[in-house]
Amino acid sequence: MSLLKDLNTLLEPIGIPVETGVFSKKPPDEYIVITPMSDRLDFYADNQAHSVIEEARLSLFTKKNYQSMKRQITKTLLAGEVTITDRQYIGFENDTKYHHYAIDVLKEYEMEES
Image (cartoon, one colour):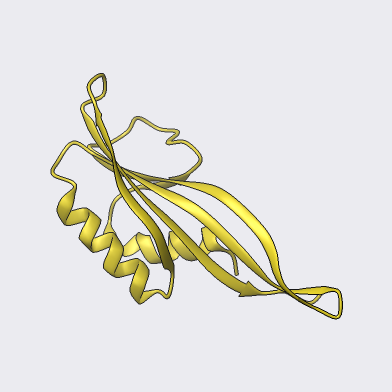
């Protein structure tokens, strides 16, 4: 599994479009962009990494009040055992008329056998 795959699976039932990196189509009034932030090896034993910690930022863009969607995303992530490390209002974008709200997340995975 990977964090990107888990996030897409968790967020799909919410019903708003989700893309990774940049929204490639004409943006609707509400959407999420996932930006991968880090992918690090952790918990060494016998000089071998035993887990991977992946981090990403979910950027919610909405022309509506962002509070309700923020709560729904937070509940969904926590129910999916994703750790939320930060939540912050980035600001209102005057040129696009979107509110931008960011949620930073991480999840630990066992190393896959090759």
